[in-house]
Length: 196
Image (tube, rainbow, N blue to C red; front, side, top):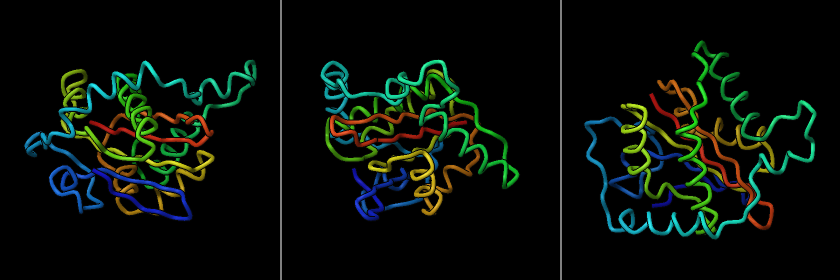
């Protein structure tokens, strides 16, 4: 499943309830417990692919990229994204999101998966939502993905300029997971995973 907004070779995508059942939809970004989950064959086979990706993927994470500045107050790109998301939410009267290690882990797996495919997607979003339900009692989730943006500010601007992505950022969520991982060419793949 692939939905996207292509702007000068910079790509951002948000996941939607409709997208899980209708690949042509591009926005609306909540999944509630009562929504029927899509169990197509693509999702069934992807878990094996994700396991293989973890073993084979030697891409540099944003944390590794900033290790050179150890001892300074430099933020990782994911930390910058979190700050920008919460600044935006607070500017419209919303509460700040809490970073979740469970969601971070799922976001990292998905960014590595997208790198292995060389394309952004919401493949297996239903599985990620199920894991969040099991691990942290989530009852709603949303996801933004993107690739190619060189900085936190650039990817955040891309998401805020897109109604579907902006709806997730401003949504009725309490927690967020973020992964910003570079492929072997240095191109970032981003996943934001929201839940409440």
